[in-house]
Image (cartoon, rainbow, N blue to C red):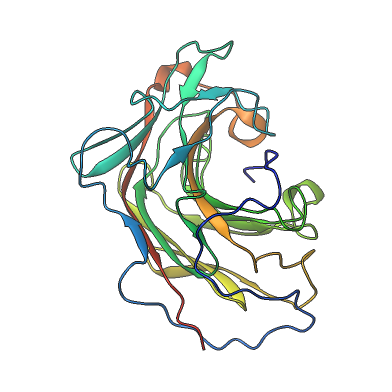
Length: 275
């Protein structure tokens, strides 16, 4: 449900291969496996700003398509690595006409992937008004703007409903504004106090989402082209905490909770073994 912002088409970046044409029939599920060693990873075993060879930033405070309240920065006040953990921090402070700051880290042009296993171990922020997400957007927007080119939500959480974690996918046919999105919800009573493993296995046939290696979400390729399955193009990862917005702010924002942080122990991407 973390909506689009306009990104130009035909951007070029390093990917994993596996070009594919627009599907006409549902592909057979070959039960693809994944390599044992990550093809891309950040273990956060350093100190300071996130590694600039792996991470970039979305910066600004224009609402990000969701009427969000924060201004995203590239400051260590909002994203920093220490003691083996990346911490993204939302703060109650004024910046460029906004009253909150946060960070939105992206791997675009530094990690763009077509299929694979994505693992992120994280502890989520607590408090009404927070809206953290671990998710993916298309790098090239080959089928048009949001939602035509798709969105993959590995983990979404809103502070006013702290015991529920959401996994979703959005496409032109299936997305939240027409209430057709593909979504699963799992109760995770300690999501804000303990680390959990959020995982997405993406193959030509399915998206499968897991929490602590338990299958929670499954969305199969129906073979009806990009309006249903735009997931045959490269995507990149995003990590962020939004403040307020159409979903995160449904019950207002509790200013007493800030600073509010999401801690990420590691991000690992495993290449799909083609068959």
